[in-house]
Length: 201
Image (cartoon, rainbow, N blue to C red; front, top):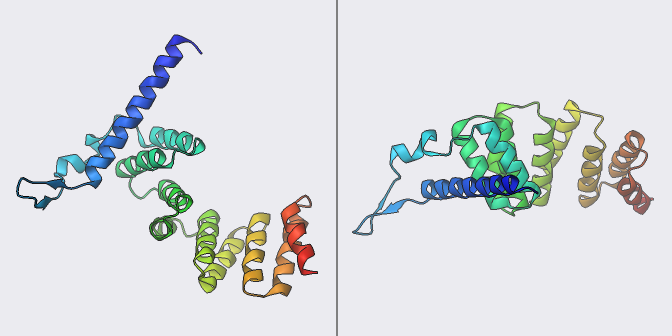
């Protein structure tokens, strides 16, 4: 790596850190001298108070941070992107996914619902919500979203596999077998689906 590349890498890290600082100042209210809490000033909330990066650039940087499993940094970048480009279902979905990966399921569900309200025909959002409902033990809601996902794209073997796992949990083994079989029909090399199907036979 050249000296110039090292300098650019350092600059990128510095800007990302400054972005994170901006997010922190917006999330934390200020305390006055008499210990009363005041809301952040309007100018601090505006997109102009953030970095000069566009929302697309921030998303790219967030994706890179996510790949490095730096979830706090990825979230900070996405929160800023959301301030600059509100009502963007891609940003909302990615925020939700990272929150879910971080174990914050309740907050993740809020962002998934916001993303779905903007794009009701997004198969990935339905799939993610179904998996989250399943993790929370809300099986009826999970089934609704798995079915919605399949209505949009009935050629996704992962959806059939995940739906099959849900059906096993609620002891609907016959239906689960059908889901695994469909997943294998679409993807004959789907080893996990084959293993789960074999357990039910």
